[in-house]
Image (cartoon, rainbow, N blue to C red; front, side):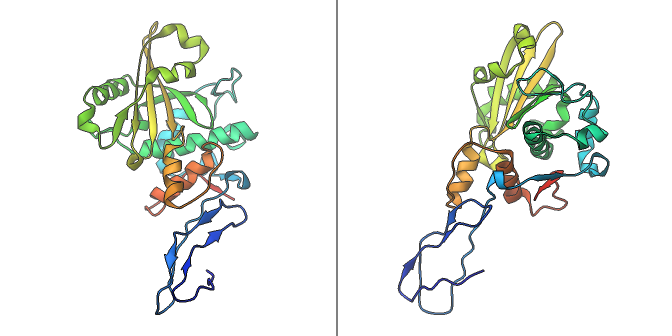
Length: 273
């Protein structure tokens, strides 16, 4: 907290350039007669100035049971667009000791995506969260993860896509072909169809692209949160922040904290230090 030397009748704006945080400025305001005016300025972290401190596998709360279930059934997960596996299985010590810049960012992004998709239920019946359809993860990256899912998820996404007017408050159609290149090369010849929807700002701007594969019949999910930065720009505009570059997993951390941080037992599986 600090005091601005503004006299009655003056128009003022406060610029904040704090170390390790994004530049920010307050709305323009008028100093009226009377007692001092208090203004709150929301600061967002500068992504590269912070390091994630992950909760150990054995210490993850029960809210991560679905997350652990999936990784236990996900052998040889790779980084997005790479071939070599990060480990035979990303559980226990292998999960705890994931290291290297790209792997750490991908781990952070996966935890962000889990939190969001485990929080939001599919809107058709409302019986299951989106993440509950995930069966096994095959690749992770700083913007997305790829996973095989219960085919029922594709059925629901097609229903939302077909009857979009019923779900327009929370979802919109998006071009699935834009994500064709995200399907691993070994699976490209098996593609039979693709469908994609994106949630609105209110739901957190995640995109779900489902690819139907043949021989054998499988469904691949390409899931990302705010890949194009639309929600991030929306929030930064609200708080008058200056941004350069694209969306970073630590930016998504800030959005999740802003949206959900006051809820009971809020836990992303890591904290920024």
